Structures are given as structure tokens and as C-alpha cells.
Image 1 (cartoon, protein in one colour):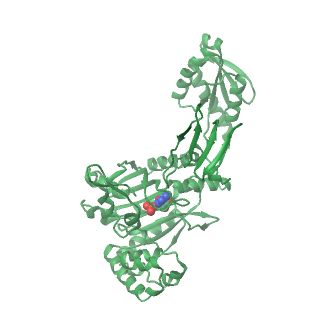
Image 2: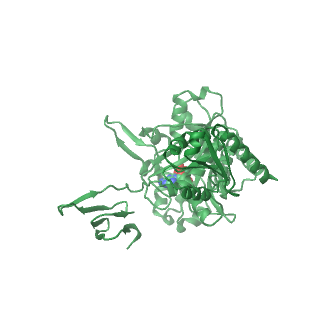
Image 3: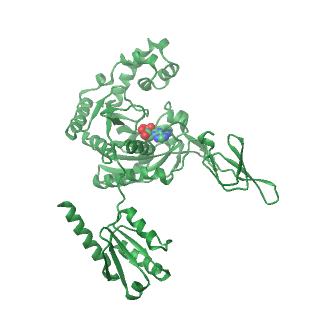
Length: 484
Ligand code: AMP
């Protein structure tokens, strides 16, 4: 049976597949992992009833605990990085005026022409589910006068995006991005700091990555370059793939994105944008690279890297998994760049902007693969102490005790649904906690608790009011021993 339609049946269950997406079950108890399953069951009178028909929309996905464990380290690291580099979080609505993206991301891009979830709301307004975040953040920056705050203003987000793309591996219709945007400075150090953050987002978890980088210059330089590119490609039109023929008229920079073999020799010989940059843009780019050299961040110059969106200028970059020092260019983990003209274009005072976004699904997938290949391991969720209880009275008292200990900053685990001490001690052993606190009826009456050293099995009785301090002291001693 194909995995998609796998039905795990229990005893005495008759399962009949009536179509790839329909299953027929008598006398129930079933599980299905087929998101599109429509299941019928006979009721007491033998009448058939369709009772489960919910399904995920194409390209959508649930993040279950088994996947979430690969997300959590990134979320924690995002918060840590943002705190260290002094970025502040911004949240904007998922639903926006569609023109916000049509004008900023630009007609002729795949996002606007093919992928936007765009519709009229009940007032007849053309709205869309945001396909990316930069335009929304720029809107907020202008609308709320964030330019009047001390600059550079550094913002970060962790938010869902929506693109009606063709679903495939690593490509969803709803996906999450972690991103950072910096406003109010055109200093190359800003671009390098952003690249450092994107780099650290992975490297802090032990995931090797590499940066692809290019400069697409200022708008006038790029326009001149585009004219030269079009002229070069026009002479070779008949050798181009169908997509490139369209790109030539609609969005010539995207010609450099083409992966088709037939276009490769033409692309290899195409004029390179760096030759069209004036000294100021070249100088800016050189400084970005110098910072990266100083930081020992591995990068590869790529003159064909232009990024798909209209609003970029100067620095553009993408981030890729790098296994054995080699760059895996199959799917970018993230990308970004400078977008200075966008703020004025969207009605703000002229200013500067630079940012990046990383796809969390792809990051989590990379972490999962790297853990499976033992390139890295998930960070351990360390627990300091386990609380075991015996009897109703102890259980009532335990929750209060647990709360007090937690308030003191210790990491604590417990299971109030279990009664057996053996089962609870097994759990404590599984968590490898150094100490378990045992609370029985006698201890509740005496306001005491038993501390059990899990390694030696030695137990001592202490007052409940002193327990947090005593445990903290014991843990400090263990830490000191480890350091020696
Ligand atoms: P972009 O905004 O297109 O530069 O995308 C930045 C990053 O978001 C990409 O490098 C991917 O990691 C991620 N991403 C973009 N589109 C999708 C998608 N359809 N599904 C999952 N991740 C995506």
C-alpha cells in the first residue's frame, strides 16, 4: 500500500479502499495519515455515515511536535541573535492591500505575476496574503514615523508568508520566514552585520553554510547594464529557452537566473554587472567584502546573482547549505540585500534599507538532515530536578512546590498523572536529572521533602521552604566539579 494511503488498523477492523483518497472502515478504531482521507463508518443501524472529511489545502502543512523540535532551536537562536545585535521585533498583519506588493516587489516578478494569494474582500477591496515581509515593514516604517526614531533602526520578524507556487520539496504555499531589516544607514557595515546574523543563525547550531554575494549597483548603473544585457541576449534569442524569451521582454535580469543547459553557454558569456558599477558602488561592495573577510565568513562572488525582486540595489546575497566545504546550490536557505530606493518609492522620506529573510522550513529540514548524518545534534533541553509524588495530598502539594521551585529559575519536570514511585523515578532517570524530590503524605504534613541523589541513591529530608536554595547550591557544586 502506498505510504500516502497507509491505514494502521487495530484488531477486527475491516478496511476497504474505495478510491485513493477514500477508505471504508467497519467497526471503527483506525488511524490514517492520509490528509485527504474521507472515511465512512456504519452506525448502529448499519447505515453508512461519512464522518471525517477534513483535509489540508495543497501546499499547506502542519508542524507537529516531531518537526517542531527542529524549529525550536532556530526560534531560540533568532531571539538570542536579535537580543545580542539589538534588533527589535515587528509584527504586521498577514492581510495587506495587494498594491503594496504589486508596486514594491514589482510586476514581471514571479511573486506578483504568478504567486500572490490575491482576492477581493467583502468591501470589494483588492487584498492579499503577504508573500514577503520587506514591503510590509517598509509600510510600517513610513506610516508610524519610525524614521524619526534614532537610526539605524534594526527590526526582526518571524512570520508566515503565502505564495501560490507549485508545491514541491522545500516549497510550500504557507511558509515561515525569520528576517531582519535595518533602516537609516547605507554603511557597508550594516550589510555585513546582516550577513553575519544570517550566517550565525545556522552556524550557532553547528550547521555549515556559505554565502553567495554580488552587487547590482545603483538604479542608474543597473539600468545601463540591463540595456547592455538585452542587446547581448537579443542577438541570441533563437537559442534561448521559452522562459528566457519571455524574460527578455518582461524582466531581463532574471535571464541570469536560468538553469537550463541550452542557455548556460549564453549566460556564461553575458556581460557582468560589476563592470557597469561606478567607483562609489564598487567601493561600497569592496568594503562589505572586507568586513566578511575580517569575520572569516566564507563567501563566493556570483555575478549572476540578482535576486528576483525589483527593489534591490547594491549588495545582494543568498545563503546555502555547505556540506564538506562545498556549496549546495539546490535550494537557497535565505537571501537578502539592500533596498535603498524602496522607502522613497513607497512615499517615505529618502532613506536607506537593507535586510534578509530565511525560510524556516528549509532551515529545519537542513537541521534534521544534519542531525541524521551526525553533522550536528539538537541542543539538549536540560532539566535540573524531577518532582515525584505519592498520594492525593502530595499531588495537591506538589503543584505548589513545583511552581515555587520554577520561580527560582530551576528547570523542573514532573508527571502528576502517575502514582507509582518506580515509574516516576524511571522518568527522572530518563531525563538524567541529578536530583529527584519525593513528596509523600508524611512530608506534606511535616512541610518537608525528600531529596534523592540520583547517582548515589542517598536521600535526605529538608524543609520545603528551603528546597530551591538547597538544590541551587547542590547544582552549583556539580558545575564546579565539571569545570575542574
Ligand atoms: P525569497 O523571499 O524568495 O528570497 O525567499 C527567502 C527564503 O524563503 C528562501 O531562500 C527560502 O528559504 C524561503 N522560501 C521562499 N519561498 C518558499 C516557499 N514557497 N516554501 C518554503 N520556503 C520558501
